[in-house]
Every structure is written in C-alpha cells, then in structure tokens.
Length: 608
Image: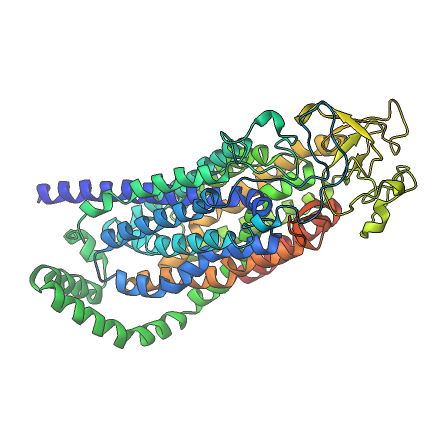
C-alpha cells in the first residue's frame, strides 16, 4: 500500500510540474502575441480591427475542436493528448514567424529621398515606387493561420489537465493545486511581455541593414521591432513542454479514502473504467468509447445546461471575458498611444508590474478559499465583492487624462492654436503651399517651436544635412522661431502625460490585484456546481463558449472602436490606408474605458 501511495504521489507531482510548464509555455506565447500587436500592425500595414481578427483566430482554433477534445479526451489518454497539443502549438508559433523570412526588408514610410552626400533631396518619393515588390499585403495570413494552429494545440491543455488534477488530488487540496497551476499560467505572461520588450527594442531587420542609416527610434510610430525573434523562442519552449507528457500514465489508482468521498455512482464508474483500461484491447475500447460518446453527448450536454448555477455562471463569465480580453489585448497599445511610451517600455511595464499583480491575486484567492473553506455560495459572494470594488476603482481611470500630441494641421493649427482637424486640406498653410507636399506620408519632424510637423516638406524645410537620427532640416519656413530648423521625429513635450503616468500604473496594479482575487474562487464555483462525471465536459464547454462569444469578437470590436479615434492614417507603398500613426487620446481614453466598464457592470449585476 505504501509503495502504491508513493508511486501515486510521485506521478501526481510529475504531472503537476509538467502541466505547470505547459501552462507557462502557452501563456508565454499568448502574451507575446499581444505584446507584438503594434509591431504587426506596422509591419503589415493593417488597422486595429484586423489585428483583432488575427488575435481572435486563436479562439477560432479552439472552437474547431474543443467540444470533441473535452468529451472524447476525458475517455482517452489525457497526458498524451496534451503532448500532441503542445506539438501543434509549437508548429503554429513557428508558422507565425515565417513571413519575416519571405517578406523582404522593411521599408518604413518616408517623404524624402536619402542621399549619400551630406545633404538630402527633400522632394517627395513618388507613390508606388517599388510597388511591384510589395508582398506584405497578404503575409498576415500566415500569422492568422499560425494562430489558429496554436489555438487547436492549446485546446486539450486546460480541460484535460485540470480534470486530471482534480481526479487524483484530495478534494480539500484541489483548489490549492489548481490555484498553483493558474498562478504559473499568469507568471508565463511576465516572461512573454519581457520577451516582447526586448524584441521591440531590436530593429526588425537587425543584422541586414546599416543601423546608422535608420532615421527612426523605438518611440516612432513607424518603428518595427524584431517581432519574429520572440516567436522562434516561444515555439522552442512550447516544443520542450510536450516531452514530459509522453511518459505519464493514463490514470492512477484511487485510494479507498478518496473513493469513499465519491457517490456510489461515481465509484462504480471509476472501477469500470479501470477494468476496461486494463483488460480490453485498445481498438475495442476505442470503438466502445466512440459509440457511447455519440449516443450520450446531446443528453449529457442538455443535463449540463439544465444546471441553473452553471448556466448563470457561464453567461456572466462571457460578459466578463469580453471586458478582460478587450482590455488586455490593447493595453500595451493604450500605454504607447495615450502616454507616449515606446512599445518596449509598455511591454516591460505589463510584464513586471501588471501581470505579477494578477498572479498574486489569483494565488491569494486560492489560499483564501482554502483557509476559510469557502462554500459555493461563499465563493460567489467573494467574487462579487472583488468585482464591485475593482469596478468602482476603475472609474478613476477617466480622470487620468493626457493631452494630444501637438501636430500641425491635426491637433494644432500652424500658429499653435489647439484644434482637431480630420481633413488633409488643413495640413497645408501659407508657409508650405508652394512646396507641393504629399499630405498622406508620415515622416514627422520636430520644429524648434515645439510643434510636430507631419513631414519636413510640410514644415517648409528646404535643405538638410547629416544622416539617420542626426539629420537636421534647415530653412523651415513654418518654424517661425530660432534658426528655423527641425529635427527628426515627434516632439516630446507632453508634460501632463509624464506626471499622470505613475498614478495610472499604480491604479492599474491595484485594480488588477483586486479583480483577480475572485478568479480562483470563481473557477472553483464552476467545478463544484456540477456532477463529477460532467467535469471535463463542463470545463470544455465553458472554454468553448467564452472563447467563441468573447475571445473571437472582443479583439475585433475593441479594435474597431480604437480605429474610430485615429486622426492620421499611414500610407502603404502601393497607396491605400496603412496603420494608424496618431490617435485622438481623449476619444481613445473614453472609448476604451467606457467599453470595458460597461461590460464589467453587466458582469457584477449577473453575480448578484
């Protein structure tokens, strides 16, 4: 008996470690995807809503197979199915990085021709030059398909892994174990965002271009980091996570004290399953399982949805996930655009500040539930309390505003008066009308007067000297102060942004911790409100519906809302609208937070 117990504990420990590593790997690659949102937008010249489609394709992959994996997988070899899933995730991650190696070098948008001499010709490049080599218009399809494959591979990890742990752990320890696994899954994004931060600092074509000739910085709206590098690293880690599951058993014998805690009905089922696994041949068992699954699936699903607690919890988590996914997907982008931070810094802050707060909250929620032995009703009340408190604290985000960047012809007139202009005709003024400047290119320069101009031509500049970041534009007729010069890049003079940004970070950490406190109790509410036989199906169907009705649409409509706040769109090499270059920060702030809080309010009402 002691030998059997020792084997059981060692195998359970190995599975817990293996599942934690798999959770870490999938969370790392998923968070890295979100950290590259703006990089992908700029590299493929696509709007935010299309990025939402790409991000939601992960959930499409889940949708294709999750019902079958959850139901059939519970009756097959769960560890090996998880291993196959990890292999598919790895393959999908490598596929996402593929476009970089076939797309060609990145040529950022510019309005001038560079010269090898000390001066540059400021005449505009003709639109469509090199258009025959434009191939990036459809390259995002590879990212889309790779993310679908990642979604298919990730499908068995959660429902089969969690149900395996709950089947072989003592009831009083299950919540703690699941809390540990979920905490590891939140630690994964820390490294994912940190990896995103590092890669965002590295130029996309590093090693293939002369960096001294690059006239943009990581803070520029045209900068694209080495997004592909992180996907190669994440794919390798995911590939390694598949290895341990090949050596784990299909199931473990349950001790008598554990069997005594189950109903007689479940005890019979456990013994029958064990006998079948040990005595029947594999092919005969598979046919038997296949027949029983098809004949029992619809009645079982009807029984599951007939549980009022499960059905209500399902509805309110769909609403909550819409809010959560929309916010998390575009939060680094919000930090970049609203507070003027680089993509690298935004990802770094998400990784070292925001995500650890979520991990601590989820772990603390599991500890609180174990310590106070919360019942189903107690778990529901606890989740409601944390949700309401987080909702009221989130209202303060509206007060943490930031003024628009000062851009001539967009947010300011050429004489410096604050105003919003949405038509290209306002980009022209008496100081630049004779220059015949293109109005769609985005090649910003900062005048001595502290005003950003969309291009050197629109600033009225006639000559320049230097190269790369050291380029200085001279004789700029629109810059009516000093030496009439302008430097490369946007002006960084949004003082109120720098003052309010630390308060935004502090409030973000506090609200993330409080809301995540209710995560583990809420998850245990889902598990404990159903019969043990329906556990895998309940977890799988919950994941299916939340990802279908939240994971797929939320990034798309949040992205579409963000697109409505764009003030200036970039231009593709062959013409047409590219990625957004500058947003109306006030409209962006209200649109993002109103959408999130509106959904969060419905979630709180549903819990009541």
